[in-house]
Image 1 (tube, one colour):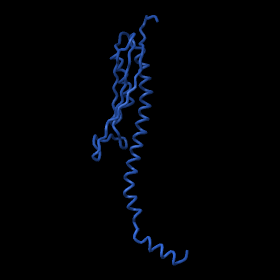
Image 2 (image 1 turned 180 degrees about the vertical axis):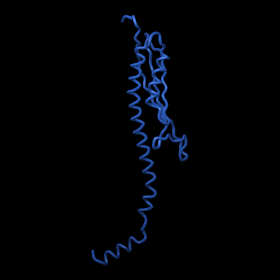
Image 3 (image 1 turned 90 degrees about the horizontal axis):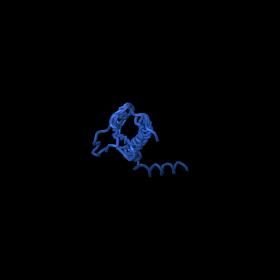
Image 4 (image 1 turned 120 degrees about the vertical axis):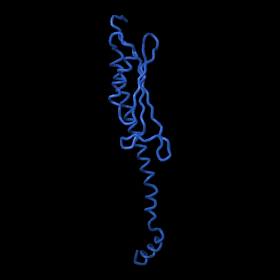
Length: 152
């Protein structure tokens, strides 16, 4: 390609100067938004995984060996206090409830709620005109509480 070819190429592209800048200006906010959504989803999945492990450990520790004549509701309170220490971040909450099931067994249901965050700070309920719903995750475990003096 000689000097004539370069001049004709420059003449063809003369009206398109700055087009790439406009494309970047339009696409960049969309790409950043998608990246933030992906990061929030991965962070939520990691928190749910950690919650499942810690909730099951706490239920096995506090519910299967209740102190004396401690009720299932009191054990739920101890489990909730244990989980609240680990999951007390911005926009996060933990709740534990117990339900009686057959043959003296008790089902403990641990709930984890959190709001989407941006840099560790929970987003408001409405962000740029879009509603940001609260995420909710539950795990449950059925336990046959040990009773001193009981024979199987």
